[in-house]
Image (tube, rainbow, N blue to C red; front, side, top):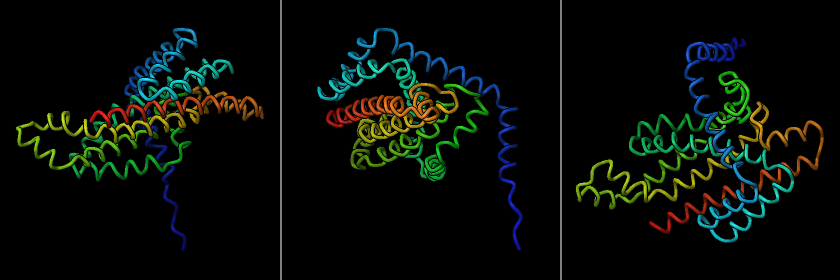
Length: 279
């Protein structure tokens, strides 16, 4: 005897409809925050000539990492400009930075709560597992329903997909702080906030930065996929090349994405290493 099928799809549809009807002001508020942030970063990257912006990025890479990374950053960004994808790259970087900032602002406090409470960690773990294992394309569906088409649903989908590493590694970094140091801080009369900000977070910074690095990489990959819902940027270039079977154009767009990924990866890795040496 075959059991009747659970109407899970209808339950989800009813849930989405309920959220659309009752939480519309919330979604409008999120849009009012996310869209100006994306526009701000895009205007910031495009305020000067590509050469000036490339030099500024290379200086950031030099101070964060080393000369080789700075040289690659300068060469890579000038190559992107030469290929004619500077505007699309600026849009992609803006989407990634917005998604990464939201992920860090939300993820680090959740990681701290998980490190302080075993109950919070037990609740978060299955949710994070779900967020990480759900296929990336699935996130595009509710994002479009709640935020229509454009950059905002792409950012929101990227945040949901990319946030787990920040939460997990913040939790891990704080839990790995030696108990002797915590006891020493308590012996000197440190409050809970003082232990967190003066002992635990500084010592956990390398691990937290590793989580931020992974979040940025996942945000970049998701932003490319989000071009299917109108997020724009280099993902739209690749998507257009696929639809038109333009192999050369697709390679150029993919190469630009790789350059941006390497630059962001090396800069965040350098920041994490710098913090580790300082500690």
